[in-house]
Image (cartoon, rainbow, N blue to C red; front, side):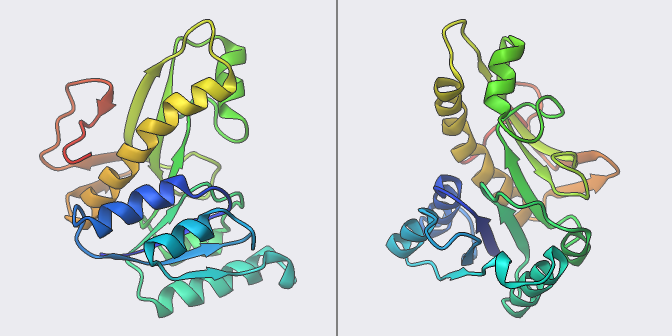
Length: 215
């Protein structure tokens, strides 16, 4: 399994995935980190982990489609099997999605379809939900609308702020994202319309469905 990660910021989920490969929990390698911000903290993580990284400036292209065409060229050259978006702050174009059908994953810090898009923790706390969480989903043409692979649930207390909720959810993000990548690497994931099924997985217990096996 050859994986590339696209990130814009801290890169903690990138590091969780890269470490899982480095530790042999997932067979294959993270062949590249691509960032759209030169000063993204994810770059420092990549350097510490010995992962090749590349900065591609979206402002140097006339259109977003041209930018995504360049990314697709790079990813195809690297013979990437799976693309993981990890705190990637740009919406990918239809062209990008069509280049890697059902092979682009994203992680979103809410229980989709609740609270898609920006500021999900603020949305959750403001709305007053009692349970929130994180979702790994396949990327489609919409915003956080793709078929769901795995979700983790966390309780929301009356005292929670967007920041404290973010910290609780992030701990689970670092576990469910590498797990989803491993399921893909093992060829256990099948997709029928909106339904994603992981062969042999446990769908009966909380807080993670399907249950964690390796993380």
